[in-house]
Image (cartoon, rainbow, N blue to C red; front, top):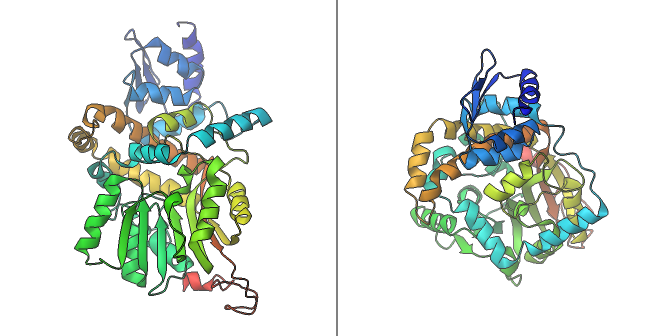
Length: 422
């Protein structure tokens, strides 16, 4: 292992942020002005640093084999320079594509999807409440004004979606993967829709049920513990949203997902998909072990597609894309806001996780460490353009070329953007 030190020292000397290494034998490899210290308790973890396996170093941190001292923002600045190259680049072969598709098909049964959602979203409501905004919106905010707070930007996002969908009083509105209910409540209270949400998270379902009762929205808002594939298309919806959900669907299930949305949507209706997309044309996990880390500790079963692949599946299902917007830098800023909020109250977060049930308490430190890296690392990934965030608005043409706001529209969509911003 001693032979690795010259190589590691050379790597550290090129970093924009000075870093100190504390070795398993107690020695230090220090750089003047260091703001971050990585303390290794095992030589094997140090070897991962020499080979620039950032994801493996992250795993070693989560499992307690590496300690991090210093600010996450400084650590992330150094991480970008530690990477061996662009982790989004790919030279995928036809065989690797077939393997990924087979893995995707096997990873997304009804039962597996439910367990994967519970793994992430049912960690602890109180934990999420520490670093999300007051409405617990767990998706990319929309900083329409640079001076906006996170809470204001999340409200701006909720309204941006409602405006894009042209929600009107009395319309039947479905939110697929409704989270903690922020969009359901906003759409019902500000646009007067009849709103239905579905989720696979028991914690989120219980939270939204309480919100409905507290706000007196019984009869106009409902939430169901249900998979999207189990929805009955007999009563179609006028408008549908899916926010931060289709990342969980799986590449192999995208045709099923969009065909289901088509069957649930009334002729002339509109659907908005808001979700994370890959920065690479040919899907694979981020390199340098980063994708493996997220798969193991944060989003088991999560898969990202390039926006062009998503739009292809949208069209194949009979839906017409009418507007697509990239909010990638908005998500970087959102994630840094979440990361900063969590970093400012680590002791409280640790306390909350230790007090949570379902076996989470004994894993409190591991969960906290994983989320620290996940939030800051994801912010970096959006900033660098390795992943993106797209809102894709589509319609189900009603076949009536003579109707609509403009001849040939075949839907409510006006084919101008003015209505979104007025």
